[in-house]
Length: 300
DNA sequence: CTCCAGGTTCCCG
DNA sequence: CGGGAACATGGA
Image (cartoon, rainbow, N blue to C red):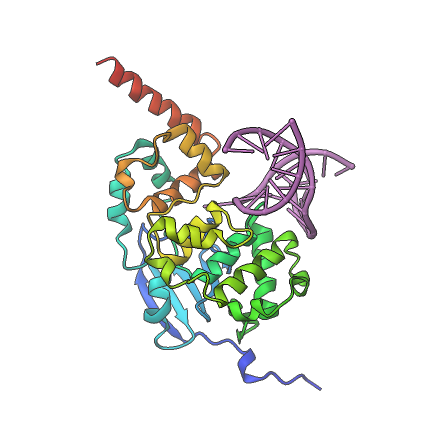
């Protein structure tokens, strides 16, 4: 007997939207730079993933980017916003290039964009990220969706709702192998469901108030709060400071992010983070360059 | 076997 | 208050 597939297990992505290729949008640079954990690379230039309870495949070939969606309205309703396609990254990068170190970082990965994810998913994935590495974060997030998220077809699942997680005891999360972070996820869910953490308000509240709301959650410190605000709430002025950005700030910007990033510090952060993490010589080179500038100014 | 990983909490001086 | 160790898990 062959097993019968129910209709909802099948995945079809019949609705294509075609975009022109752009120097401001690289799929690997954007999807593999540690900001989102729900994308699988099918080949060099093809990815499939889920967000906002939808699945899509996105491929870059022959000067075009093809976004293949489940339903007719998905591109405009979900993916246009998710990939931040209405923001002019070319103009932003021109501003950033006023700073020499940023100019190098932008040149190194010019196709990075900052995704606009859902607040709850960003909160959870960055709770999971603490003292952890990207492959394992991806694994835990995948198991979390498979175990508790609504099926979307083809074995894909939505990210679980706060209600679904709030209803669980922490040991019910044991199969995720999230370790000590399991109870943090349940605490976060409980506070979201109770309204103590207002995910909508995080998008507009003054940054210090939004941070205070998030850090009330056990297991959420300043860094995870900043990631939630930047990647989940569209707060592009927000800079998560992890070990890599700590080094960048100490070495290059002890007085804070440079003026040319004003209002978009979080986006500038993404280029700097990527460069510091993947290019071992970047910080030394950039710091030397900074010293030369300072020396030059002193000699005037 | 030790070390480390987009941190945070807890505890001790 | 400031500095460390502990915290689960798994890959190098």
